[in-house]
Image 1 (cartoon, rainbow over the protein chains, first blue to last red):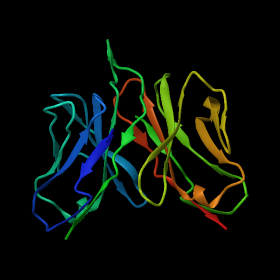
Image 2 (image 1 turned 30 degrees about the horizontal axis):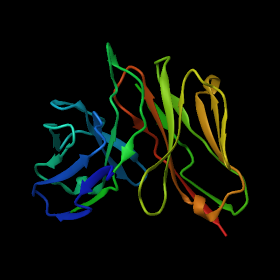
Image 3 (image 1 turned 90 degrees about the horizontal axis):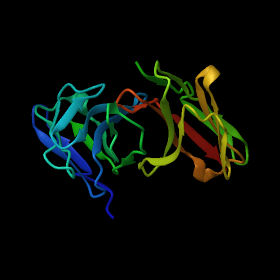
Length: 120
Length: 114
């Protein structure tokens, strides 16, 4: 099994350019999420999805868009890159967290290898 | 609101020393889950342990042990007889039952010197 696959591993952008970070998982995980990792800031949640067609914002969503058209894929889009978006990005997934009355449980997150993005 | 505090930014120890990494959390939920992840120099994030709020039993796995104390909202991680391979950044994380969000601390960089 490939697990969680992120592409590209490295990317350099100029300010104002757009790009998409790809995330795919083959574990039939309903829950997927994006984090950014910055020195001294730890891992901060950007967006998450509890299933196909359902997304929501995390702690630092500004400047990023997501969509979830399939269970397997959860791309992260930067519409107009800024130097402040220079970071290492991680995609993570887990089995479903949706219970009969809302959030339920906390499955282990499986992380991708990360994508290092530099915005000049 | 949920919050995880890892006050130790960086710790250096000499091989074979014991070391404890601190994690303090905040949540209003009575049901919640705590995690520790390891990020070695290669960069990947590796799951170490999950603990739910109803289970305060300490856990030991080889040289690793975890001390969960609800009274002080802490979930500390101890490495006994540290080794160079333990050098990594360690993250503590929290997920409360009423949210879909996993919140991570800022991490503690552990350097084990030979």
